Image 1 (cartoon, rainbow, N blue to C red):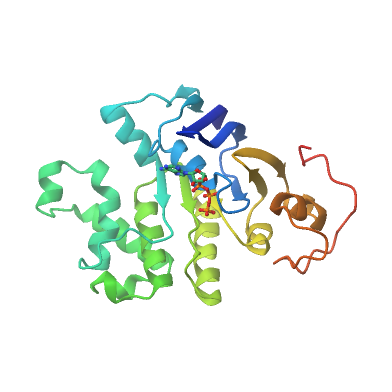
Image 2 (image 1 turned 90 degrees about the vertical axis):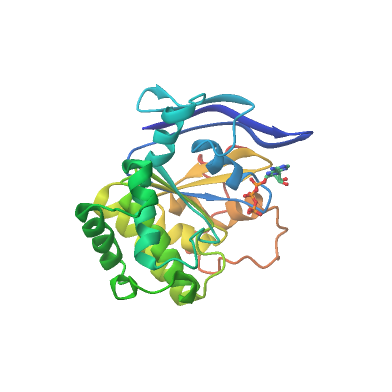
Length: 267
Ligand SMILES: Nc1ncnc2c1ncn2[C@@H]1O[C@H](COP(=O)(O)OP(=O)(O)OP(=O)(O)O)[C@@H](O)[C@H]1O
């Protein structure tokens, strides 16, 4: 279980994340939603300590990871794999090598420098690629793949890391609808088949409702909504995105629109 307690991060005068407290159950698929600048990316980066908090704590399975350093920090980062909007793959290397990079924390520095991956690591990488229909591209240079294919390679790399948590920061932001579905399906598969907790920042409310079992809405660094997909009514969405009645929302298919706000919305 991941427990975030009163977590804040300031950048100069700006408070990007403001006293956020959340308890994330193991195996859940949590969507983090909210306007641009709401603090979603910073929250994910705080969890795997790419950004250090100004205040608050992050506790995983009873262990405080807020101030880890050195090897303990590297171990923690290996347990929470990050997936980025821009894939962060090495384009000139082949797909297989990129996936094997996910095994780096388990491989000695010398062996990884010499690319002496074990047979077990290679089998694991190939199996991960197979799961996302990417095994046929194993020997291809990564930069020759489409965006959606590259993101599936990034997800395979995250999977071989054998993480407890996947932090996906707008993983489908630059993809077309078909690739968007393939990438979201890949994350759903990881979550379902391996019980890996997924925290995923999303701009699309339709996707958030379709894939996540819990939605956390942020505004000005604070959590202002925390509920299930059905709680995300049109009223809630309008408040979250600060829209006036009549503005066009990207969610057109909300069936259960109610005028009263559910308890999940912290007024
Ligand atoms: N390294 C930084 N230095 C200064 N300000 C930052 C830094 N990182 C984030 N911020 C600010 O913190 C606020 C939250 O940014 P963040 O990227 O977390 O929001 P977001 O909800 O992920 O936005 P988007 O959906 O556009 O990615 C913004 O006002 C941003 O400008």
